[in-house]
Image 1 (cartoon, rainbow, N blue to C red):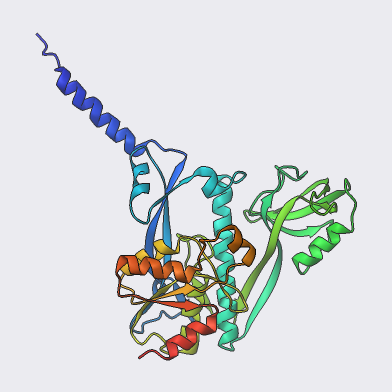
Image 2 (tube, helix red, strand yellow):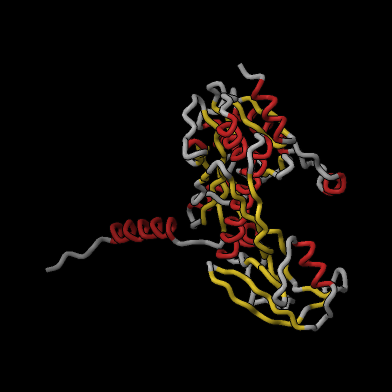
Length: 347
């Protein structure tokens, strides 16, 4: 006679299955948490050489992972946050489009970092305009479903341009409903699409119904390579520039210190605000950083009025460091030169 399984044993099996499903079934929610502090000497080579001086520069990251029924509870942990799919991707952005945006932000920040580092070090470089990079396509655009985030527009009606301003000026000279032929690149291939122009709600002028930025590439006489395959977003730009500049000049600015930081970078040296800085402070502290550069951004008075509790990245970073009771020194920086001046005074 076959022995029956006891109700207690069946209950344990069901419980184990439920726990297993709790770890693997995806939810439309995401957990944002402290990521890692990545040593830039492992990612960057200048003149085909790695940085072998003592100490290191580190970029800091935020970890984002899709939640499951059980891991969603992690949002209650310190420095963890739960985000809806719309909060992370935006209401009109797919996962693929989000990844394309992150790749663009990273590529753009690398170009800006190289340009700034070479310009500050007085080394030659050439910046080339490739066209218009599409950041979003509006739902009412006649190009919706034909153009997508990540496409680079290189010509309109066969005409090429040298900036996004020239691009927009040409479109404004046309008429609402007039058909426009767009030449674009996607996944290394060139194609064209034709559709009527839309009347833009804000300006009443003709438009494609897209948001855009300039798409550029940079070439240097002294070669520089940056590995960024596993990193997205614009927030590493400042630290990239610092690493490249230090190697270009050959100056030992670190003097053996472990230095982390974050912030967007512009070609004029402005260091911009980023999100999740408290999580990046945690990542830097865990990796043993002794100095953390934080953007000392100025908050627009109108934004400050609407969000009275909003603080600069620097103040947010100081608050996080104090809460962690870390010995890491948080240093405010508004522009690239602030960081260089600080490093020159290190012992």
